[in-house]
Image (tube, rainbow, N blue to C red; front, side):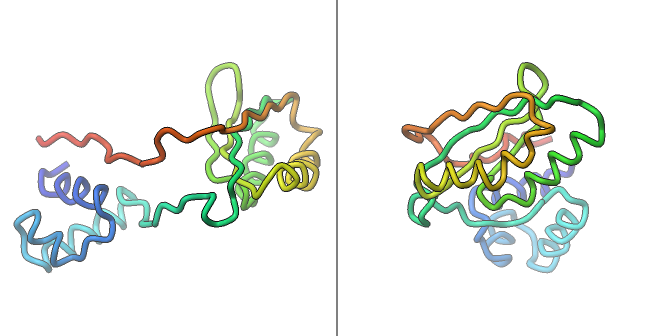
Length: 155
């Protein structure tokens, strides 16, 4: 990857709200060249999108849990069914497939314990035929929430 593209990525990971003019000044290119590079990085899927980080407790999602899942069946159909179901659940902030003891782990944010119980009954129990084991771990305190910039080294 070109050095200037890496500089663009580093700058946007630190401040995704940076204007094109500010970004161009920061990396030493014209605004049009910078915009062209950013658009290319977006089109190629290098830049996946832009978003604001929001504190869950500030938007009535004060209870966070990490739930691990072991599926009964590892068939492509069973895994796809699980992935599609989880992708539709607004309470799931992140979900990743794992290699090892668990098949998936999901970061879930809900209002409180009652909302968690309702989420389990409404969303997770209907998946029961495909889930062998599920365990929820309650977050007591978040030590670090930032999504630090990926370490992109210059050429």
